[in-house]
Length: 455
Image (cartoon, rainbow, N blue to C red):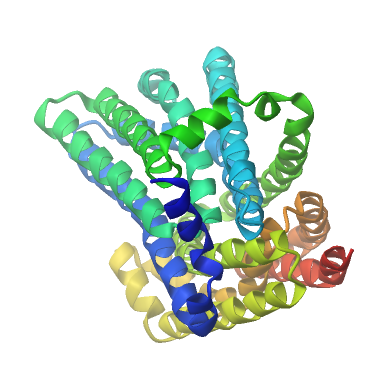
């Protein structure tokens, strides 16, 4: 693709057709993003099916343990996606191709550097993870085998984050969907072949994930070449300005703040299962079910946040305060509508979904007691998901960290007393307080954010 074609592509999301059909633009960005987000959990189901047919339950426990370790490690580096999206969206708003290419190379370089660090520190990471999670001795060997193979996929996983950030910033969510489908379908097929067909067990799942992630990473680079052209990318690679340390400061600062924000969020969510475990096995099992519902809700609402990131980010980069507010308003209408659809779905069918997930009557009863809170969850949480998109669009990493910190402190203050007074319902009511406070803190901070557009 030459520079002329590239320029028309870059201008597409903020063109007159986009202005005439803003809702169509939002759907075109949000729906592929939702599908892309939703494809990942399906691989976990395939892994569970493949390993679940092996005679020893230790295999399934090892995969579960290994997945927890990698989810924690990789989720911590999710800032590579979020920080890159805001930078690229703002550059798109300025129609600055050189700035976009520079942003791409810096994000890729940071992803590769962090991936290399994870490979160097792999023994320490495994040691700390096993000490923290204290699995049964029978599971440690299998989990270690899984870890030592899959760790070599981490540079590819981080590269996928960086490339996804670029594609989200360009409002190219269909390309993100293609990349995710290739990753997850390849992963699922290889895991079935390696585990069921070749009998490789835990190692087969790890190798399937390793190959699929590197394939998806290569595909991501190919997509960038198709969009920007090899000549433009190589020019950016050779440009000394790309590699000046001063140029990395903004990226590192934004990502550093988002990293701390993500650690706070991960800690808040991990406390749910930890405290549920102190209440009993049934309460822990019920909380696991509700966590899946929370994941399902986030997959949908995140799609509209991605539309906010792309469109509001372009308006921010172009210094258009009115457009910025307009895209925030329009994407929020869709997000609120989606939250009401989720709430209605759980109101009318929540207990039926629970019945599909578990046969245990005591767990069903516990989840049923939480269903009023589950119904409220999407409506309460929609603001924080939307504002995350806004703050990413504005590359306001410090504000994301500060508002998350405020919500986290309030969450810690209410978590123990609410759980002590009302048990499992109190625990999940505290989670709703946390989600609500995230949105409220971001809403209170928002005027300060928008004021930056007028300077």
